[in-house]
View 1: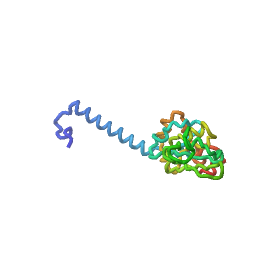
View 2 (view 1 turned 30 degrees about the vertical axis):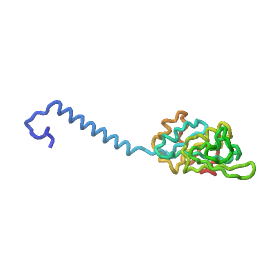
View 3 (view 1 turned 120 degrees about the vertical axis):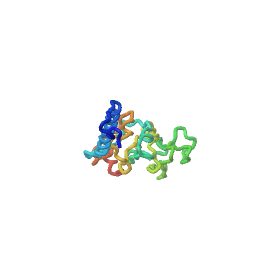
View 4 (view 1 turned 45 degrees about the horizontal axis):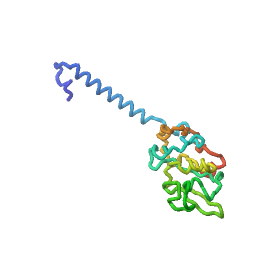
Length: 197
């Protein structure tokens, strides 16, 4: 039993009174915080969800390190309507590759997530293996700089936890993360939207 209430005749010291007040205050703060955290609306509340604006994205690699998931819910998406099916794909091959083949030392992607398939001379198709993609953005950066920007980063909503405040959005230096309507969750050409969703 609490020593403050053991004996009605004993006096409560100022120190004991302050300790009890601090304990009660701390308990009240913890209770209020727990209530607020459990009653927070999800990121999709109001029918909105997080997405990356490819026009603002600078491929800073924060998507690969800041997401609460490992690997990240952000993945590279290939917009086939914009792709030139190049033999020398700047999103696939490293700059200055000694051989223009599929050897790992010639590939830009550190995980080998981009798969190259021969179509006909001189065309190749490039597909993203999303299970290997870590959202580093290296292929996107090179495709934008030297190609036609057919590779972009997007949040895959089937993987995303829909955090109330996205950790990547908080750390994104370009403020490329934005809330979009859940009915149209992708930020790129409508024509490409129908094939990739």
